[in-house]
Image (tube, rainbow, N blue to C red; front, side, top):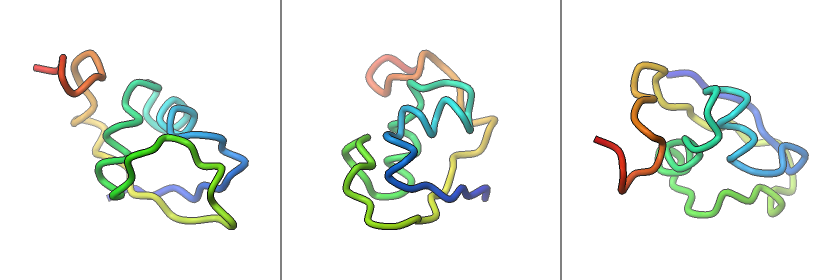
Length: 68
């Protein structure tokens, strides 16, 4: 499993998903995998490691209610 170090400077899971997965709409997959519900990272007081979903799992239109 791939991980990435993030901090409040990364702004949001939208930014993390775009940088790491190439698709900002995949933020919810990162959130779900790490037990988060809010894409905002402003609450972080220091760097944390987040797990990233497998690249091959990043498919569909990016929104859980619309993904096949």
